[in-house]
Length: 533
Image 1 (cartoon, rainbow, N blue to C red):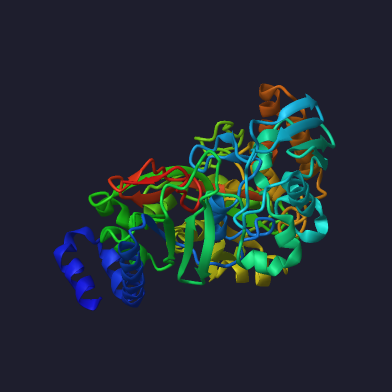
Image 2 (cartoon, rainbow, N blue to C red):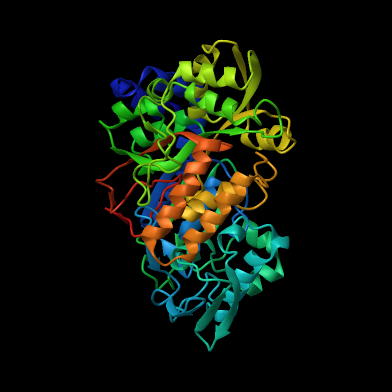
């Protein structure tokens, strides 16, 4: 393996950026371990004659796979292939399609919908998908004691009941115009298996998707195999699939450059230009943001003028150019420009250090010294020095940085209320893409608005929720956008949590080996409907 790796490196030195070389040198052991693992897979596949897809994933397994509770980037992406909703969103286009449903839901009236299940649909253990499984799947999410992240997305559902051997009926608490799209937030699971041993199901998931789960090795790989009995719209096109968990960027880029995998996510920005010479590569605009979150219980950040000042005092274009090499767009709204419901906010925070200084003066703040808390995510670490440079250039402002692993950041500083200012990444679009869902993630429920940035209960937060409620209860989309726009204007003015920029997600793949592959506007990779050429 060592000689093979050395030969590959010596014959392709022009493909490595300075940073890529340093990363490869630092991550040599990871690259070698990956090479050995993949060589073994390739040998097995060659012996069996099976068709395979291999991919490089940038995140390790931080949670299990149970779709009711998982929020990890890697299991969320894996579950696209393992589970189905009644309606799902195509991972790349984000358009809804009938998955376990035979067709899109049939509206009976404003609060009643009927759905027929796909005939012959089965779970990976061979058992049929039944209306009882559907009812169970929704009831467990709707039960607040289960702590499902999806609860806030489907809280408009009153109850679900079976109808015959293949149907279910949904009763809503009120008319909800995004019903079809929102069904994708709940994946259908086999009741008998989950009730028998929930922990085992979390570790060894059983769904009805085109691929079934084989094994997962933490910090190493996830193996899938074709589900022969799948009869849905996106059947598996290969016999086996392996995702290598390559959190080390050097190992991930090396794997792609050496043709050892067919696709990788999260290409380091400094490596995108030269990797284009070797692979297909696209930087997809996304909702994924870097946001500033303030603790409104900690002065002076309870003063909206101080919060606005720190946004005006940020040279966002310089942050994007230096930290992301241009692979982002400064926020002009809560949404990114490519979203179908994008509308600019009335308040746009263009760089204006004089206005920032004036706002601090109006707030009576002559000296502002604080620590900004952030995550140790690689691209976030690249932009934070530029952010600090902007803020520290403001008169009377002194800022230092404490970067932590994401779990520690929230457990030790955010959830305890120790922080004053937090800069962190976020992207709830992995759960869905409608505007209400993307707003609800941070502004509905108790986790964020109540317990983290402490905006809940204010007149502005109450008004925001009222506008969001009006938007989803009107059947006129233009009217709904009017209400959403008003809500966004309040959020943009108050900035309890608000984006600095929305970034582009670089994905690399070998188009001559993967037919129909599309990069995603979220973390992860999708091989639904993708063929191995």
